[in-house]
Length: 118
Image (cartoon, rainbow, N blue to C red; front, side):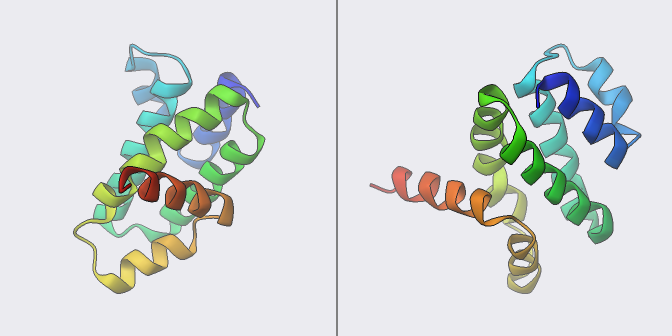
C-alpha cells in the first residue's frame, strides 16, 4: 500500500477527513499519518469509541500492508503520540484503547518506549 491507497482507505473510514487532507501542505505519508493521528486523538477525547476502534484497525492495516515510508510514518508519528493521546484517559479507557491496537503496533510501541528509557 502506498500513500494514495492509504489516503483512500482512511477516507472510507472517516469521509470528513478529506478536507483536512487537501488543506495539508505536506501531502506525503508523514502528513497523512499526522492528520489521521490528530483525528484519532480527537476521537479519544470525544470518547467516540465506534469510529476510534475502526480508525485503530485501519492504522494497523496501514502498518501491516503499507510501504516502508508508511510504516516509518506510523511508528514515528502515531506510535510516538500514543502516550500523549491517552495521558488524560482513565486507566480503564486507556486499557480499552490499547486492547484495540494490534500486537504489531503494541510491539512497536514497547520497542519505542523502552529504547527511549535506556
